[in-house]
Length: 395
Image (cartoon, rainbow, N blue to C red; front, side):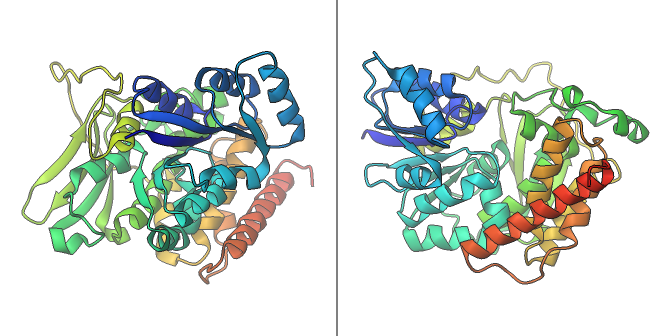
């Protein structure tokens, strides 16, 4: 049956890979809506190729640019703007599936709109669960939505769990969730040299092709920390049931350890089209365009994370243990800190310092409304920005 697909964040790495998979199966998927932030030329090209019903951009200026790019074409796409536009296409009655691939806190509101309207949600935006785990999972349950993880690690866990898994690890004999991590580009770099790391070095991931923000998160292992928080909510496991394993080859994407001693893993080439295709077609399987995995000559190794080298990973476990707004504050501070590092305002090693300082200022009570989460997020961003200004002498 034809699926109407809305891609939130279609110009980013996940969005581009999603459209690559979709283009291979025109008999199964119709692109209903696309959204972009700043790469208007890329979005215009996608609109010309897929002719979606809607496209969403941040504001009227971007809308005018996109409209001009589509003039004198056969594209009849209607252009919407802002958060309201994102929520409209995510919750639209004609949308069947929503790829949630907007990076950062900006992806929360449309993801909630998809959950409340019972969509099939392909979740690549980990900040949705980091910021609002309880709130979002409740919306998924109340709206009757189907939630499928896109992060390669969580998708691997999803594939390694029993098909009847219903959020009760004890009922199916799950002992541990084991998240693999490549260790990024600085896995063996002397800790004393991390202060001199440049944005270009941090963005040069050895295995995966990702956006700049996610690449820096991988280098600090904040990305893995956020995935720990995400796993807690996706699979309803306790923090002590989640273990992070450094696996530099990125062949095993994650594992599930069972009480009977079995460890079930999902393996594959490091290509995001695999989890995208798995979630798009679930419970079926479709061609993703990914080359078969060649096991001959592979040397698979595993290491314990060095928390002195990767303090951001420990911060995530602390945020889970503390509860309240700690994870929301951690995520917000990290977005500000990474942006400052990419702008060469702070050192690489200062990202973790900013994250820790701001997280420890967070409220200890849980957020019960989206408004409260947005306020906590905004406060943490303000605190992180102020701290950076103090450190750089611009306050």
